[in-house]
Image (cartoon, rainbow, N blue to C red):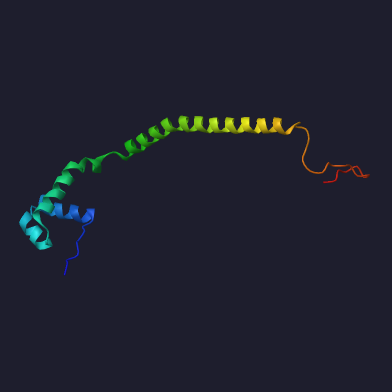
Length: 120
């Protein structure tokens, strides 16, 4: 019967690494206790040190970078919208010219009643 693969959360991985780095526990003892292969432990340690700088990045900088990227994208989006609007307006004007005079309305003409009010 196959053993189910155990997946550790990032918090658990950091706690395991902390036991070795801060509490000075032996890697072999920790791995034996948790039924973890030492190569896996060292892979986690390598990832932790390679990507550890991300934990200390300033949140404001990433927000600032996101806003700058959005501001750079907005003019292109605005030009695309303006282009679409102008195309629609040109089509609208062409249809008006094709249909004839623009003063005529569709439907029944409105007539005034004897009382002076207009009928719908």
